[in-house]
Image 1 (tube, rainbow, N blue to C red):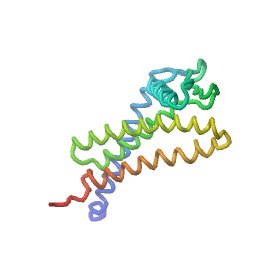
Image 2: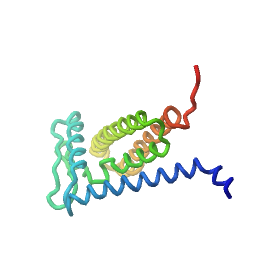
Image 3: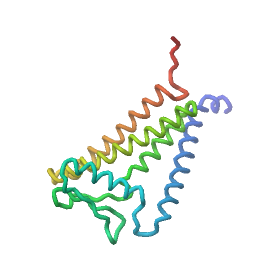
Length: 182
């Protein structure tokens, strides 16, 4: 039994670290959301909405957002037409939590780990804002493709980028990265 534990120790360490980090960050984020009360939009989602409006105005100066008075979401208008809404799940925090949990589970030295977490999180946030803005423009121009864009293409894109970031981390910076001596 002991030899199996030693054999699987790196895998078990990865799993336990990943899940503990994921659960802890998810708990903290849920506490943050609960501090806003029922039917109130959180600050991160509002910030995503403002940033998305800024990107959308690059395509159409008349692009606007409007916070719903009754439900926790932001309405996005493009070409004077209501095209989409941003809810809490659109703000990429859950994706960033997943990203961070993986990086921590494969952590390397402290400074590169923290820098990669910070840089990767900012990159995912910015990418998400552009994703929402482009998604709105596409849904305005191709309304019958809404399901494909929202349900397939853009999730594949954002999770694909996170996967590439993970590969870069594991292969270049983690404690398991191959170290070449020159």
